[in-house]
Image (tube, rainbow, N blue to C red; front, side):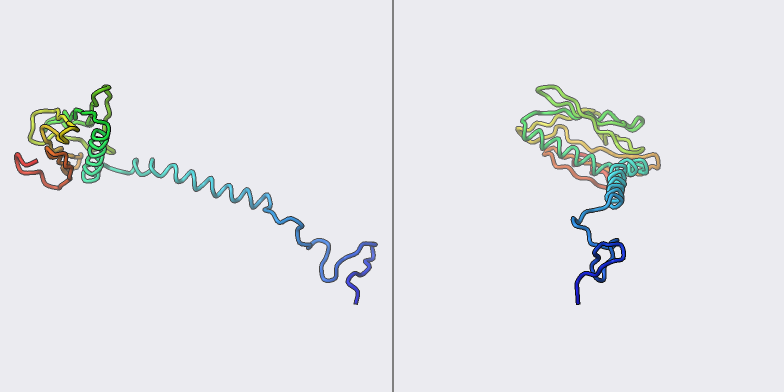
Length: 181
């Protein structure tokens, strides 16, 4: 048997295969496949980029979550202070009738301010202390005076961020006993 047969139009055609279904000489993606892949990647990237924004918009302000975030923020500030040797002042101006919406750290040498603002409707109250300022000294790893910050929201929920004199940060549902921060 011969491998090639004569077609009526003068060209050779391999047995069992027509001219339209030959395998491609160089395998590659078609333009349609490439565009579909790029569209899926773009959609996933856009969704991932919008996710933090959507989550923050839906958050009504959970005091427990805010107290934990504040505790991590304060721990990070103390870690940076210990590494750089720079002291800082912590301002929490809120008191019971007028809760604060921001807590400020003022670094020394050079002077630099950083603020912590909550997500949602949470506010801060400095618990059982009339002094709005505490000073953290990295040489001794101490915060003086120690403080407890009550995190509240509009629905009367509350949670506490407690910072000891020795720089230990914890959160709790109940306030610390008087004088035992």
